[in-house]
Image (cartoon, helix red, strand yellow):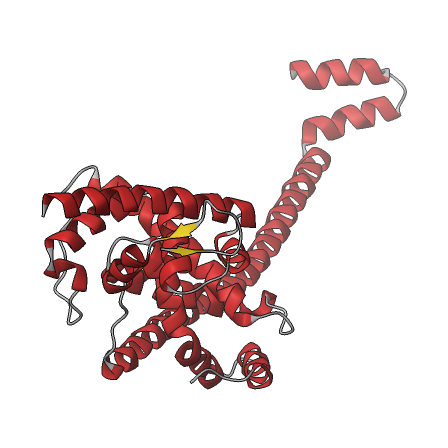
Length: 126
Length: 181
């Protein structure tokens, strides 16, 4: 038995150490270590390749996001434009509707108040 | 042969710049010591090999966070220890469901050759992973308490007390096996 420097409780058993060393003996074959090195590097290379594979979708993701943004802008413009067209056509319809036009003519002559014109338009009675 | 610190620093800096060959050189320099650290923690050779591969991959990915003025070996050993402890935890869960099956390997574990060694190996397996790691790193690999503390992320005093308990337990087993044989 060998006493260690720090503290009497840490007593080394030489037989135990010898047995432990035989159990945990590392491979001594140089070719095994060369192969181990290759396996480690192969694992790293495989991981790098996998990482690169994931960067391709990243690139496409950016393109996709830009395309989606552009599509949203175009769709928004189309909706705004069609709404403008609808309201413009409604305005034209109001102007060219003969009944409404008559009412406006009567109103202009001062026979009907604004309230009466509205009521007649709503009830369809001219 | 181990690289000199200056060479190692140059290798680390080159690897950080993305030179794959430089990292391969670091693998070559540190694989044996890394294997020893992993083997001290896991219960078999295959798991040690797995832990080292996992650790080098992790180190490669985390290399940009490593400060080149630090000791690369100490940093790597900490990563290896974490990978090995992780494998030990996963194996514990897996072994609860199935019997372990050893994969054929060109390297034969010397512990298989004798009854005494097998009993001692069983006793080592029954130790908590940290205690097993401490006794192997200290008695087999020659690590100092402070180095063990850094590698396993524990205080030096804990490393000393773990060593004491592990030795007591194994000495007991060794004594009873010898009295039987």
